[in-house]
Image 1 (cartoon, rainbow, N blue to C red):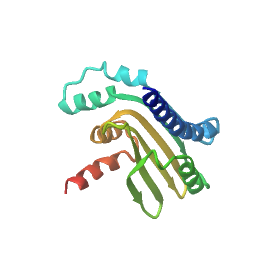
Image 2 (cartoon, rainbow, N blue to C red):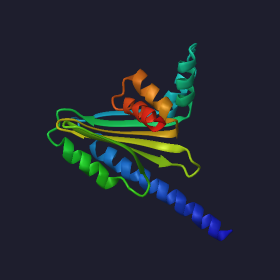
Image 3 (cartoon, rainbow, N blue to C red):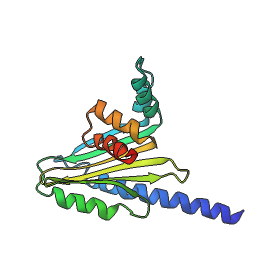
Image 4 (cartoon, rainbow, N blue to C red):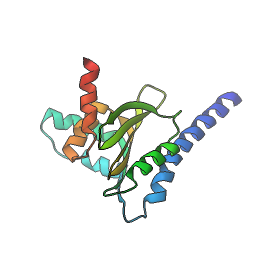
Length: 174
């Protein structure tokens, strides 16, 4: 019994430490006025679920939203140090806790999607980190995550980058 309790405490501590790493990055820059900072609470997501929708696609999106616990976005436009911020973000993200899902790279930007598994086969967090010649963004979405639905949500809310998840889903079916 004692071993089980110790194991549970270790798991909770590791999850808290991983979240703290992301929180440290957000905390470091959230008061810097050159960054845009967006935080959406679980309460805001629950308000979306009260909306009347008629189309099956909208019902699917509302269902996906109901399982989300929060969203944080930190972005900087016209940043001369965008690539350095990108590298800095990865120094704080514990690689043992996140699995790389997808990388998109072109001449103007690097973008990585990482996921954290809840240990039961469900995605508990999605990170998107983007660093380009002039722009930087880190997005953390947490809760119970369905990538297909999150792609649709990103398209509806015009959150750049999340549309790439839909393309990934199509590639995995080929």
